[in-house]
Length: 208
Image (cartoon, rainbow, N blue to C red; front, top):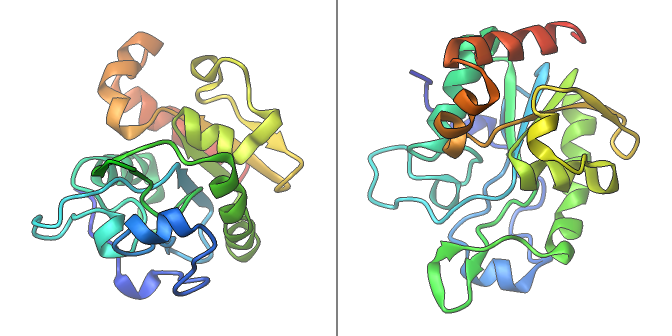
């Protein structure tokens, strides 16, 4: 089981950031990147969900202020990278750092707008420059498109575990399934959970 990240690893690049008024109005905390600041792997999600303020520890980035700290997705993605041999050697972040709420439903997330992605892209660029990872692993369709932009493959599922270089960030990107849908998509892609972790290890080992 993955360990909860050290709060001291929280990389608050712009405390109180208010570049996106709609996001600033609906978030509880900015979910900054966290983990090893010299990691070989940077794991990028799309944006934090509302989370569970009543959870004992894994409340989610909207409440903890750290990306990928939710009860399900946070632990699931951290577990798979630990099983791949990268426990303590990952930095976890999101393409968009704040919870994007549906206007009339403050606990339901929506897809971030193009402007919100663009506003946060500077933060992601700074993180990639600081950490200088050998691999940027994007989790899910939206995270992959946020990172790759126009270079994103037309079929996300066909791109899973297929490394691609991006000129925008000068990085090697590894698209992965979103942890929330891991149990659904891995069998359809022909992987067991163990084979998936091994494949992630092999792809990263090829560039480290």
